[in-house]
Image 1: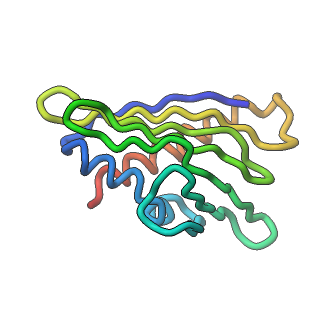
Image 2: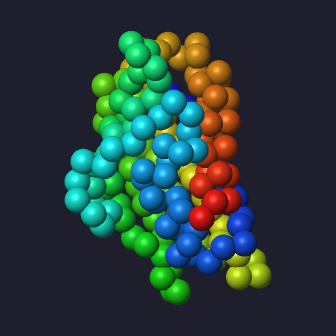
Length: 146
């Protein structure tokens, strides 16, 4: 199991940073070899379920997630989305928080606990490095493009 934290400050209003990070199908456009299918109707809410399928052929796996906290940002409070990972391979949770930053910017905090079923703890350090790289690039790309 690995825990990691990513932080970004971006020149976007809160609602736009939130929209870019929580548009689940857009994640497929920034994570290589990944497709995202939302299984519940819009808009996103507590109970929304989606699946990110990553990989190629027999090496592909599903990362099934359910939204368990959905609080979009307001002028008075930061936004918070919590996803529970409930796949057969990938387990854990992720939290995406969007709060006011300096100078009218937005501060994004992405926290994640990631477990890969049957992966020995010997591989935690490489998994953490890979996850930081993949999710960090994904967050950067999602925040950079409209």
